[in-house]
Image 1: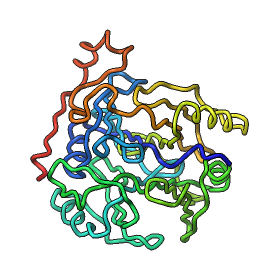
Image 2: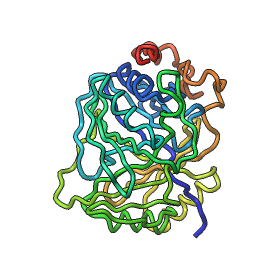
Image 3: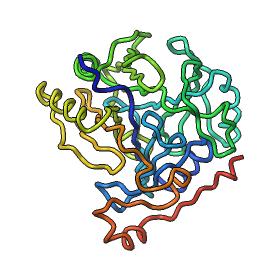
Image 4: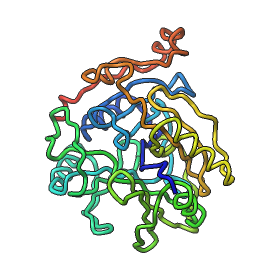
Length: 316
């Protein structure tokens, strides 16, 4: 099978207060705000992109912050935990750092031989930090997180589903994923089985359905190289009964969307063109960037957005 998908591109969540969202991911976790734009499908809402220095595919956690949104609930049919990759010697640093800022942290857990910690952000978003020596990517820091301890990008994601068979068929039959192993009710898949491409399915046959709102994942996007390979994926999926959207232009990549059999919204996003097309690399995320079609309404759009600022010096 031709390699069309190479792992996770980005993961997008619903959040609440915009400033609290920026504070947590840039301040506490030390990610870079690489783009500050709007939800192209709901222009009155921000779309924040947090990642490594350049917002490389496989590092970017994005949010739609709805001020005043009630908290959602984790359950089946959802991506319940987003896992980031950290250096193997950094677990104690992160445990101490999270506790310093009032974040409740799990005991150190072990999964498929790797040690990790689990916690939630201010909205209840499920996050894991997985310690590994097998991630060659370089993390980003504003200075408050030493580079030798910084987050490198995604490790993987956990899908909570009532059954795995049809989702497994999708991943392994049409998305270049392979079965890696099983621990209890957790089944692991990867394109190569490395940080940035891991997808776990936790099977929970009697679980309650999740309720999507603040603190829950909206969708997971998978990487494809370019527009040509994206169309190949779309054709393959549609020929095999998956209902995909038309290609949507998201400025920094193009996307198609579809529901996997367990109910999670999947996206296939291109690696090209990236986040530096409308801002200098040294100044990513500093301005509110709008798609061309929204520029005529800039004044009205910006007026309705809650002002936010970077306060990373408060988290040194």
